[in-house]
Length: 307
Image (cartoon, rainbow, N blue to C red):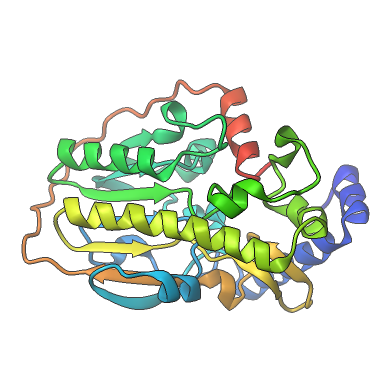
């Protein structure tokens, strides 16, 4: 059931209403909240895994020069929250440390009910208020600190890039006809109704590619400094003006429940290693629960998850 405000929003933004129909169609088709055809990341073989948020497979294949071999997997979600519920929910993962620049796990921590050995919420103390995200360099520093602190744990790193906001040269110069504060929140549903009116599809793609390159630079540094079998992947892809299904609405960004190839076909880049750590399982550390609701909401709004 949809409330009055949701109906009003659908009238104001008909493109969003069509995307919601696509999402409902896919959920009913799969009989659940997430895509059951996707990979269970924790059943795969890795010692360290870097999630580069919203990284399309084709963009990764075109731009990556990382050592190792590139394969592909199917994601369990068309967006981060769907990915988290499809992989994390109700699991004891006391052999794993989760280092994340994305606040969504914290937002849904009670419903997800995931038992990691430790969680490092990098978005709490290394957020860039000017860029409205965690810069990948700061995230990499946090990842390397965790790798040094937990040499016998599986390491799960969740970057924000190439997910908007765009922080490369093109992205910082795009004229969206708004003030800096108004730009926040345009990267998901508002982006489709506002952003494309002020810039070209080519500029959007270039800004996305710049974010992708920043994410790949961060992954390269991790591969140089973190031992073990290392996988670089994405939680989901990104739509750059392609049409969704079954209703062929053109879409930018991504959407939970929309399971087209641009969103569910993800890179799975493997760097093998003969020097693998001995992973052990210990009781989990208590998670830092000190973030205020206002801080979480502000961070999510900066990333475009909320208006």
